[in-house]
Length: 388
Image (tube, rainbow, N blue to C red; front, side, top):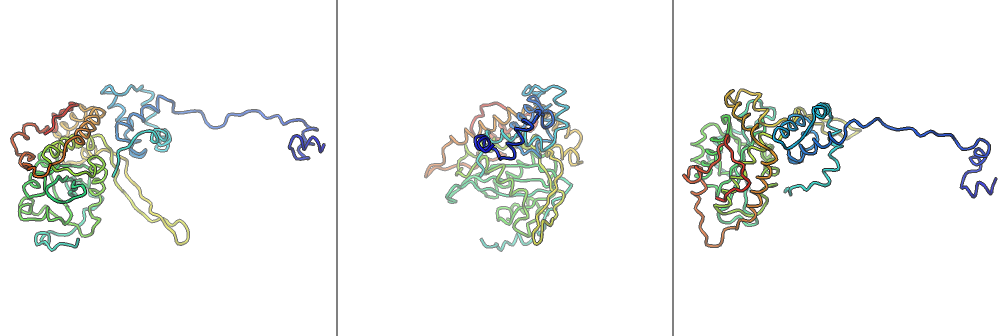
C-alpha cells in the first residue's frame, strides 16, 4: 500500500478507497445556460459601436435598435427582424461583454491670472445654469486656443457653445479673437442653430465682455461665479475639439476655413447621431466607517436632436426638416468625410514669417465664403472637399 500510494502520488487513505471501491463514476455535465446572443447579434452592436465613434455600453445600448435600422436603411448593415428583436432586449452589461474584445483592437483618436477688473463684466450678473435646465437655449460658451507652444501673433480659436438642456453643441473656427470675428462667429452659429438663444454663459474672458459684444447680446449674457461653472462646455473642449484638432498651432486662412468645414460635418454627426446622458441625481453613499463614495444616476442616453424634439423650442415644420436631414444622412460616410478633412488639415502648412493673412476671407459675410457655405438641410458629403 505504501509503494502504491507513493508511486501514484495519492494520500494513503485515498489510495485505500480506490482499491476498495474503484474510481468514482462522474458524469460530465454542461455548465451554464445556453448561448442567447449569437454572431448575428454581435455583428450589429459592433458596427453601430464603430459608426457611433466607440461609445460606452451605457450610451450605446438605448440606441442600438434605431441606429441599426438607420444603418440598414442606408445599406450599411444587413439585419434580420429576429436580430432586431434580440437587440431590443439586450442589456447594458451584455453589450459591454460583447464589445470587450473589440475595444482592445480598435484604434482610438488621441485625446488630448488673476481675476481681471473688467467694467463690462461687472455689469453682468453672476449665476450658474442649473444642470437640470429643461428649456433649450441656455448655452455655456468657451474659446479654445490653437496657438501651439507659442501664444504670439494671430492664430485660430474655436468658439464652442453647448446647450445645457439638450447637449446640442456648436463650434466655429475664428482667426484671431477681435470683436469682428467674434461677432461673425456668433452670427454664423445663429444662422445654423434650429432654436433661439436665450442665455449665454461664458467665462470671464475679455473677448466676451467688451463694448461691441455687450451691445450685440444685451442682457442675454451671464458670467460664472465659480471656476467650474461651465462644466459641460469644458468637457466638450477636450472630446470635441482637442481630440480632433489637437494641440498644434493653426494660423492661416486656409486652416481656418478647413476647420470650419470639419465643424460643419461634426455639427451633423454629434447632434444627430451621438447620444448623450444627463445627470439626474448625485448622492453620497457610506461604504464603511469613515469612507463614502459618490453615486450618480443618469437618464437614458439620447441624441441632442431627440431631446430637442421633445420640447417646444422648434416648430413642427422645423422638426420635420431636421428629421429629413437625419434620415438622408449616412453616418458611416459622414465619419469618413470627417477623417478625410482631418488628413487634409494635417497637410496644410503653417504661416511663414512675414506672411500676412486676410481675416476677411474667413468671415461668414464674405461673398466667396457665403456662396460655398453648406446649408444645414442641403449638406454635401463629397469625399474630396476643396480647401478654402
